[in-house]
Image (tube, rainbow, N blue to C red):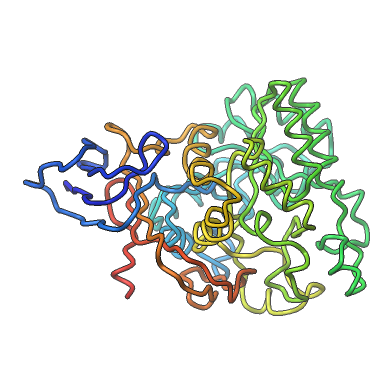
Length: 425
């Protein structure tokens, strides 16, 4: 199929320009002003802005094993609604993808049901239990990298061995950093005003940045490519900034909720409970500064749907994990770009260019010969976020009731329209 997106503002050479984009056979074949329309299916994007398709390297699709929370079909449809054309799927599944037999179960469902590109991760340890290394070498050709997301690898020698194998396999270690020895009796909440008001023993920031520091010593020793999940605190930003200054092969991500909210915004409701927790104002401001100066490479949602029963309680009685992939761009654009805190280029890079560069994925650019993974933005589309209105089976958004000013008009993956706002009107 040949399509021509015309009359829009196209992200090209780091800025929006009035250009047309021609697509054929899943690739961009031409970019220019007033391209000929003959032979093309014309998609008029007048008043809209076109960027490369978003890539989220940290998503929980819950299938196989937990399809009552989310499925690959619903999770990828929700992702398309959020402007995403590529996803890194976390291994918190049943069976855990810790060997080829288990991974194949997931790969088969992806092949059958995914609406966008899904790149699975393999687990670092068998069952994500931290006791025995998974079959990293066998899974290497089929996974984005290795992670035990949801738990940090507590054994230092085991993490070093995993890094050594990952280095040989040419795959990154993608680390959930959490020192469990510092968390006895704690609940996953920042030890700030909210925790004090509710009598909670909060999770200290050192449980995150301390394990990052440990792992960075191992990175220096092994040379392994190392990516850190969901930064939440100011100390983590500084530790990573120093590691990058030394030239270590380290990258990282944070989420929209960490960049926008503080623990003063939360209530004792399950929709605010996540791991790591939303922290204080100084932490949020440090994360924003780290995004702007390039210390933080990616914005990733950690989209983690649960059932209503698992999230309807308070902090004591709810699971960790919130949703956000359908509204990530809208919140970031409204509360960071429009407020002047973060340049648009930084946001586009964090959602497109950097994830593709770090993980060696196609996409992340609008250029002749590039894959036709594209997102059409409506930057003048105010609405109020309500979880019940989402496509995802998970409805527990911390942004419930927040007003935003932008939306996704269309998502194109491999030249195919996988989401069109007009179809949902």
